[in-house]
Amino acid sequence: MRNVGMLFVVLAMALFAVGCGEEKKTPTPGAAETGKPAQPAGTTTPSATETVKPPQPTGTTTTTAPAAGVETAALDLEAAGLPLVIDAPKGATAKDDFGAVLVAKGAGFQIEFHEGDCDIAGRKKEIEENTINKLKKFHTETADTLLYESEVMGKAEFHFLTLVKVGDKTCYAEDVKGPVYTKADVESMLKSAQSARAK
Image 1 (cartoon, rainbow, N blue to C red):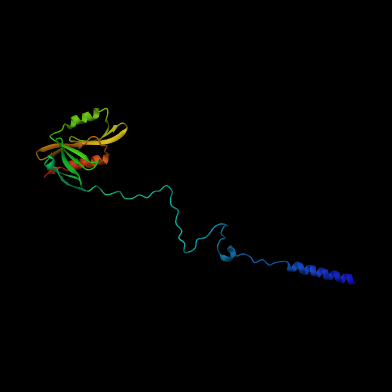
Image 2 (cartoon, rainbow, N blue to C red; image 1 turned 90 degrees about the vertical axis):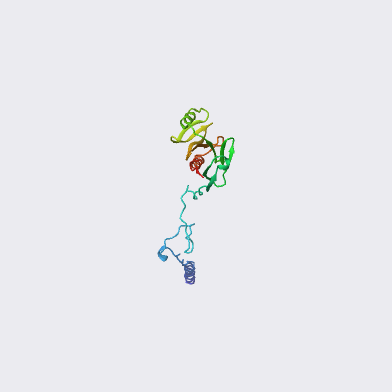
């Protein structure tokens, strides 16, 4: 009888030990408790003070506005042998150059003025028949003006020739041969030559 009583005591202690070993786990707040969707592991949510920048498109570049045009000023050619005034880039000079009047400002602006008439049609034929400086295209072709593109050793260059008549005086202007001019260079020189006027 004493052994049976001891068995009940041992069983009671074993059941007590099992009951004390269980822990009550507190659930982690989830979507149901906070009202917010659960975040995947390894991600962060920006705070209210952080600024979220939109993604920039790839392959784009920022461009700036083009530079302003070249400033011009009236240039008197009389001291160089021609009683005319033209509009030329500020700082350009005029001087006698073996009977011609050379107006220059850097390598990209060099005009020769020659007194007298010019056979534009004859010069056009020479340009077309030149086998070294080969004609590619006439960009301007009138009775008194030629602006053309040519090619030498695979490199493009531009030239012009124009008649200038002011009152009873006739002369012609063209780019100085040698430097390689762009189309913009030649257009600037042509505009300057055609601005010729009496003093």
